[in-house]
Image 1 (cartoon, rainbow, N blue to C red):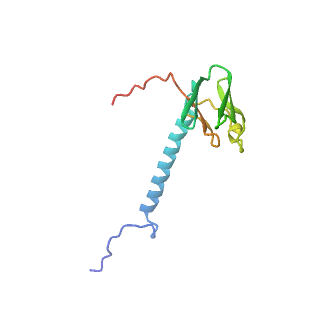
Image 2: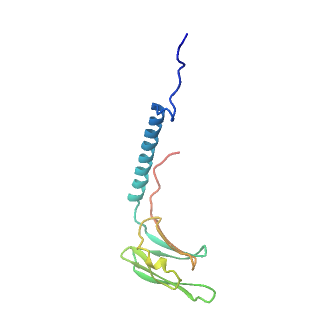
Image 3: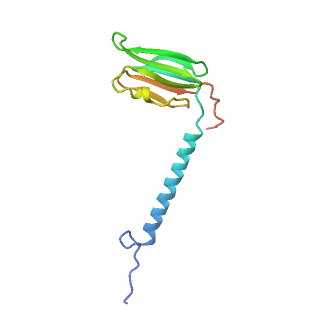
Length: 138
């Protein structure tokens, strides 16, 4: 009656169970990363830019029409952000905020992209307006 009791492999014993767990987690991470990359790469270009100041809509502008918009904020309109819409892209050309991060941001054109100026509480977001309804039945 000197039989060994069956035990399940553990992480300490370097068993198959631990190795399979690592492989499973790696496969799941790769799949999630690929799915996220697909959503990012195949995101469409936007149609319009929505500018909000302190949570209130300042204006909505088409990306198809080139223009320059002065966004003045502050109690006496002393704060300025200059939004330029050109060639279907939007960018901040000039800003009077201390850090100027918004003016250094690359141009945006894809749905959901945004430029934020925290000191002036300005958010510039690209969105799609003519998106067709998805063919999903729930």
